[in-house]
Length: 314
Image 1 (cartoon, rainbow, N blue to C red):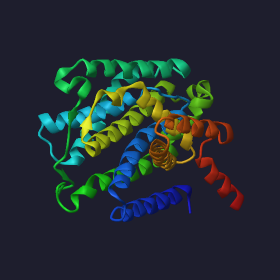
Image 2: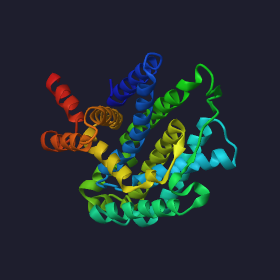
Image 3: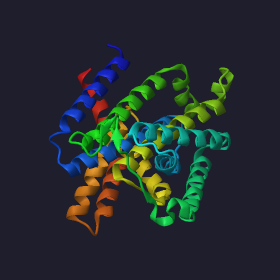
């Protein structure tokens, strides 16, 4: 069995298990898993950027663009089904990244990180000062149907959960295949030695630009799904703390597999929920301590535990 087939089998099994759990999960857990998978899509894009040697502190920019594009399309274009709204959010984020990437693709290391953060904070400032988009309060958004199923119906409440799980499956599988393609294999080569990549006849700037657009599209998809699940959008989605949370999950989960971002996102949401419940005044300390422990003892992320076990068995 080739590694790609192993990935396909693992992702398919995870999708089936996720969907099978839907009827027995309480509402709070259903909501938590849905949000985690949506945020995992953003981190999936960060995985691609990190493999290219880039760390973005501004993925909240595309996350917010996806959410606001979906909300605006529901209001202006009168789209009522969740899937078209998600596609609009994904396309809007990717389109913005295609433009900004013309500049961002020129920079590396801390300059890239800070420039991406600056763009995110510019969007935050614009959203806060735009009454038409709800200013600091944001606005509500909701889909009436999910893949044709009425949200108010008996099956409809599982619609966002199922759609998010399906999007996560398709995105993870697509990115896995992309990473195994010729273009995808250039990502670690760019990280290790850009000059050698240029000697091979490939354009480093084009590779970085493409990866930026792909990562932004995934972030926009996650933002649209989050907006539809929560039912509300506000400028905090573009704030630097949101982008920092995505980087936190990327460090927590590691970049060893396309499944790692989703596992890390679920783990963070569980950790934060229980920490807030049992230590409401110091839950940030608990989360920060967990991150410090991972950095010290598992610098390659939690997914490295699975890789070590797999290596031991081999």
